[in-house]
Length: 330
Ligand code: CIZ
Image 1 (tube, rainbow, N blue to C red):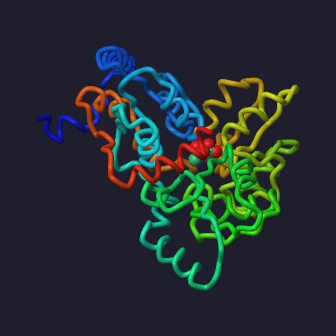
Image 2: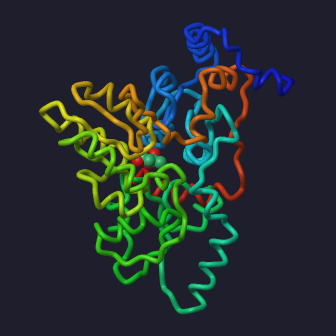
Image 3: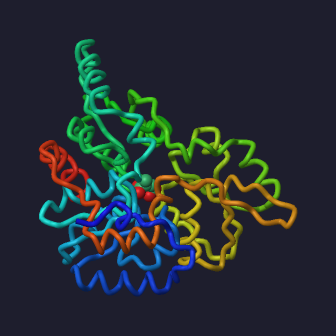
């Protein structure tokens, strides 16, 4: 049995990242593994991954991958969803503590109590959950949405039902506006997208005249109101490809998203919002998700080497499986 120190050794600052990458390659072959990386993890992990994407695409990639082991460089709810949709595969998460502020904002017992209270008051509703929730919460819901399929799923909720949308109030409010459906909103928010302030955005616009603002719908309404394009990460990719002329784009989402945008459409200049501009004109990327940042090359290597942390099947996954399959695969 490996010791904790072996599984998460202190990072060796002299370890050559290229040697770690070679080791990952070898371990992948040895263990019949595939690496999935979310757009919000560090660029160097995205570069060694077999598949990158948003949670909708990665959930589908996890199902279609032929390999028996999946290393999910992302956060807990993503690896959990991959396990639920592919129970026969071994799913490894480089750091079990990679959580999600949105998922934390909606505990399953609080949701169950709220649903019971609404029913006792005569509300006839279906519960729609953003994928950033625990499996225990998903098992209490009728539908799961991602930023990539939310409109389409909301259209599947019967018109005679009310909608309880959890846990992201900002995404819920945006979806109310674009679909015209009234929703009861859970008061959750993403710690990264909530950090953007209108002052940050206006300052960035002032410093970059003629720039285009792209914002994630998890941002507060005040930010969306000053944006030229609103969409999840996959839609942002499609948008930058559609711009013929080189442009300056101010990006209001997790800062690592700039890595895939830059690779896909290098003719543009991408600036993270907020960006504190230093005297040398450089802009910081202070909007990084601390949970996604728990993924490192060394931890990817170590989870392959020791076969842990592994997502373990739980009895309540069964109910969440039906909801996830209906919402993401059909
Ligand atoms: O859907 C996802 O993966 C998240 C969390 C954001 C996005 O827009 O990709």
